[in-house]
Image (cartoon, rainbow, N blue to C red; front, top):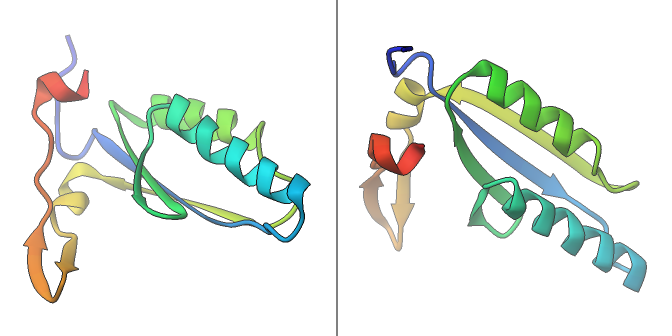
Amino acid sequence: MAVLSGYRIMWMLVMFDLPVVGAKERREAGEFRNHLQKLGFERSQFSVYLRCCAGKEKMDSLVGKIKGRLPKGGKVDILCFTDRQYENIISFRSRVKSFRKNPGQLTLF
């Protein structure tokens, strides 16, 4: 059994800027968002989605699934970082500093 480590557990952040001028573009952008949610990503901001992965292998698999459903236009960036790096994210909500709380092991799997 693999030991869970803050350096093995990975986080994926998908950010995108997709064209939504026409009806077809809006539909494609919506389908892309839905696809991310079906893959287990949670919305962090409007065009920013986040997901925890058990390791690099799972992360690589998800990158392939996202790549297969990319809309024709726009820009999609995927950032990958360790659980230890995730803990150091500093967030502000309504000018109040908040810290990320990592999910428990049972939440992850």
